[in-house]
Structure formats: structure tokens, C-alpha cells
Image 1 (spheres, rainbow, N blue to C red):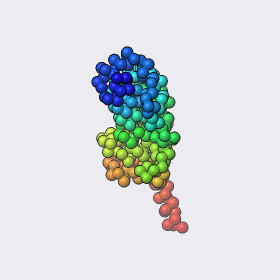
Image 2: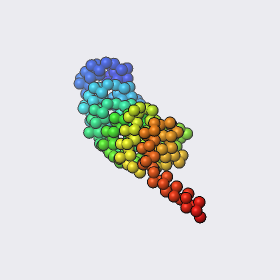
Image 3: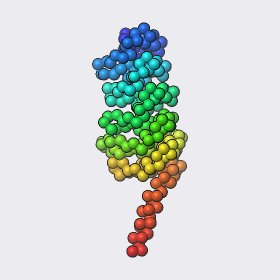
Image 4: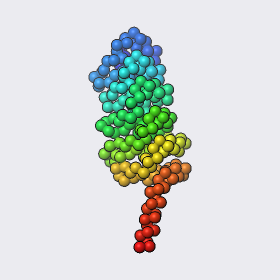
Length: 227
């Protein structure tokens, strides 16, 4: 079997690694879906050992999009891969932290936020703090677009478990203004957190970050009452 087949059929690591060594040119070969072996390995949840070997054999693969228009870093964020793997991909293609997929949709930071990959999210923010204020341009019933990673952590806090508050705090440190960004439906991250019954501590963080807005509207209301 060729390298793509070994990966697709989830053969053991030893067989895949042996094929990489004996048929090195295959790491650069696209299949009928226009996926490289690295892409296939990400999609098939191959081990970090295999993926790191593929990257070592073909470093430029870190900058190549798969058949779903996603970069390896975005796939790693979606599936909560190890920080060691994410670090290796970033080292080979640092720009990946700021690149969206699907014509201005999610960045890797958005994926990590939505899928509960808190450790990966923290690493991405260290690599590119500006990723915290990037908004997606989705337009679908399940996602109105205009969301920052902060919106996604607030809405999907349960996937982050006990680390949700840490994720929110990190995003707010990187971009405090994200707390005041409204998505395509007009919701703040705070609104989504309340709707999703987020823990009190998480809501408190968002409320404190959004306080200037609420204080301002309260002052306007008071002025209206006196006029």
C-alpha cells in the first residue's frame, strides 16, 4: 500500500513511518481529494508521531490547505491536538495563526475556542494576540457571523470545562475590546454566556469587561428620567 492508503486505513505507526522513510516522495503527493498525506493524517486522527514525521519530511505542508480549505493548524485546533504538535506547525508556518479558512471564516483561534481546546487556544494567543479580535464572516442559521473567539468560548464554555474562565481571561487580556463586539445577531459574548448558563465567574469576567457600556447606558437612562 502507498502512504495515503496506510494512513487512510489507520495502519500502525511503524508501517506508516517505514513507508515515509522508504518512499519519501509520497509525502508530497496529493490524492484524488487533493489532500496531502499530512492532511489525511490530520483527518484520520493519526498519532503525533506520524504527523511530526510527515512535517519533518515535507515542512512546506504546514502552509498547504486541505480539500476542506483548512490549514493543518486549523485542523489541529479543531481536534485538540497536543501543544507540541501545534508548536511544531507554528514554527514551520507562523502566519497560520492569523489566516482564516473558507473565505474569511474561522481562524485556528476560533476553532480552538469553539471546540474546547483551551491549551491550544492559549498557545495561539501567545503566538498571535491579534487573533483574539478577529471576527468571522459566517452567515448561517447556527452562526450569524461577526463572532470573535471570545463569543465562541462564551457560547461553548462547557467544552472547556473548568478551564473556560482561564480561556476568557486570556482572550480579554489579548483584546479587551472583544467584550464589546456584537455578532451578526447583535449579541455580545456576555449575552451568549448568560444564554448558555455559564458559571458565575465567567459571566463576572465578561460583565466587568463590558461595564463601560452598561454604565454609559445607565447614565443616559438617568438623564432621560430627569429631562
